[in-house]
Each structure stands twice: as structure tokens, then as C-alpha cells.
Image (cartoon, rainbow, N blue to C red; front, side, top):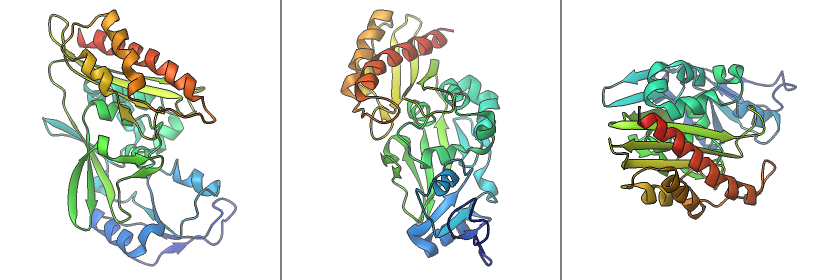
Length: 301
């Protein structure tokens, strides 16, 4: 593992002292996490962690930069599912043809995030592990029934993304575990998906975001549906009431609106610096309606 580099010089940039490690394998990273304990923080793209350090929101004793772990990069097509390494940059997802064509909602979400410069740095694993209720990648991954592969001292486990988030900035990850990849099964049938985000500017976190995936038959009957939202609860959530209403019905604008109105049963928004609970509750119905229409138009193609 080598001797750690200790940040005791350039404190005007990062206003704290910490020991710095760069493991070269998942096994080595897990050993380090176990040895250093909960005071260690993982550095991926750095677009969230470094800001938190500069703002003095956190003061880590140890930073483990995982950028040299080659297994954590890239996309792999396994036929039945697509695997995305946790360190894959958002820009790579934005430019990938499989993501554009098969997982359109995820492509739209990534493209809507921040600036090109940040997307060149930020990673999908970091966006998920930061566990913001407004994380833009979470709702699309939820509607595609993604699983997250987690490695720890006792082996590897696959966890549905719906079980990953525990609250704002909280996940099921233990201090000695690391997210290694995102596994997304390929959708089948006449599928359409979409993502919509409401934010003050492209650089801001979402006031509300939503993703939808629809599978329809030739008669327009909804055979499968998934809807998920962010910024409307302590964690990203599936809109089960909306899904249950639509499943088995012929898709029309009327049925879509009747379904969208039920989203209030699935959310528990709060008032914060970006928006009010009342606004989020109101706009959630509209954004779900719009994202359903968008997904349906794509499913008909």
C-alpha cells in the first residue's frame, strides 16, 4: 500500500490535513477501508467530495483515491445485461450508443447534469454513493431495475438499486465496502423511456426529476411500467401507485393523467433552499404526466 502522502502544505486549497492513498485493486481498497475505518473517504471523480472538504462540511482523516483501479472503468455488454463500472465518467455514458438507444432515460439524465467539464470528471458511482435525494442517475436506473454490485471483506453481493439508499447522504454501504459496478438488464418488447428534470439552471440540483419506462403491445395496452422520481422524498422513490394504475390499461392521455395524479401517494417532499414542499407536490403530477407521454411516444416506434 506504500507510504501515504499527507496533505500538510496546500491547505488553502483543501483546508484540512489527511493521509492519501491510491490502491490499484479492489482487494487493496477494501483492505485499506477495513484498516482505516469510518474516517476514510473514497475519492472517485471528486466533484462532490472535494467541494464538501473545501466548504468544511467534512474533515476526513484519510482519502482513498480509487482512480488507479482499472476494473472499475468502462461499459461491458453481456447480452442480457449491460455492466457499467463505478468509475465510468458521465461523459462516456452520454456518448455511448447503447445508452442512447436502449437506456434513453439514463442518457437524458446524464446529458442534463451540470456542465461538460463536470461530466468529464464525475462518475456514475460517485453520483449514486453521494446519495443525494436529487441524484439524476437514480430514477432512470430504478426504472430499468438496475442492481448495484458491492464488494467487501466477505465477498460480493448484488443489491437492487431500490434498496441502496437509506436517506439523504446515506446508503447501505458499510465503511469497508465499495460499489464496483452497475448492472442493468436489457429491456424487451416495445419499450420507451424518458427523463425530465426541473431545475433553476443546468448547474443546479433538480427541484424535481422523474424517469419512466413503458412496455406496450400493438394495441397500446401497457404491459409493464416503471416510474421513479427524485427530490420528492428523503431518497429517490418508485411511484408504485402510478405504476399499478397504468399496468394493463390502454394508454391514453386521460389514463396517463389519472395515473400521474396518484403520485402524491408515493412522495413526501420537503421545503428547502431550492423549492417548497407544496410546489414539488404540485409539479410532481405534471412531470410524471409529461414523462409518461414522452416514454409512450418512443414505445410506439
